[in-house]
Length: 339
Ligand SMILES: NC(=O)c1ccc[n+]([C@@H]2O[C@H](COP(=O)([O-])OP(=O)(O)OC[C@H]3O[C@@H](n4cnc5c(N)ncnc54)[C@H](O)[C@@H]3O)[C@@H](O)[C@H]2O)c1
Image (cartoon, rainbow, N blue to C red):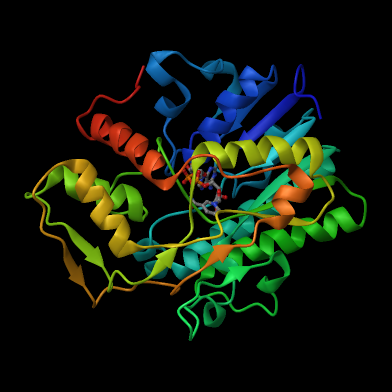
């Protein structure tokens, strides 16, 4: 698909992934609008260096997508919808709000899909998560190896959290619509995404921004890693995710789920040590084993992403962390891109 002149809606476009996608789509010549209730997103993410990417008065819709009428309105006349809005947060929030999170995501995803179909939006992209893989399989193997999931290993399903379930329901629901020819569907399933425009608050942040915040605020905020630090994740930098989102609309429609992430994992202990190194501070790392740590280990077999999309990860964890740290440092000092 060529983006020039196309009307593209990005839900969750003020969030971490969405705001970078908006920038890339604008560069490709698309007419972009954004729908976001700013629960975790920020308008400043859409105005890097104070320069709005889109006309924020006309093309930014501050709406709650649990409202079906809002979904109907924002999808009118679109050629393509990237549906990224959902409740996403760190492990503490996810496990402390299982019902409300599941309830919100199911409603948002169902409303958006219905609205896109009713408004005859021809092309639709939905994004799932590696948190949907079965918890029992998301562990280090007896030989110490990392499980490298293929897309279909998500079934039989038994994710650990309601977040993982909600995102899987969204995939399944959208696939049913595609199977009946109601729209063309791009389906991506992401591993752990990080980069600039991440959420930094103690309440809602994910592991990388949370550890960077603790490093920057040390010693006022102690540098405590939740869990043993042995838990492992496959981290993928946000620009690699944007590449995949553009590619799926060009080459990946109606090709089933495509997983995006590296084929190796990194322990949270290694991550914490790297962040401390980047900070340049003499930080003591403490571990709190009473805190929940989630799945043990997981990574991606990204053969399908390479074969169907021509995708490959381009930013190393070291480089991505350095860039993210720099952005977080500025944001925590109050010097974000706010217009
Ligand atoms: N960040 C990750 O590690 C990761 C991994 C796998 C999948 N994903 C998926 O990618 C998508 C984007 O994630 P992200 O990392 O950019 O998170 P994010 O929180 O930065 O973006 C989600 C956006 O959705 C908005 N939103 C939430 N509830 C809403 C509602 N009721 N109405 C309107 N907008 C609402 C938030 O304000 C936010 O801007 C999500 O669907 C998420 O499930 C993310």
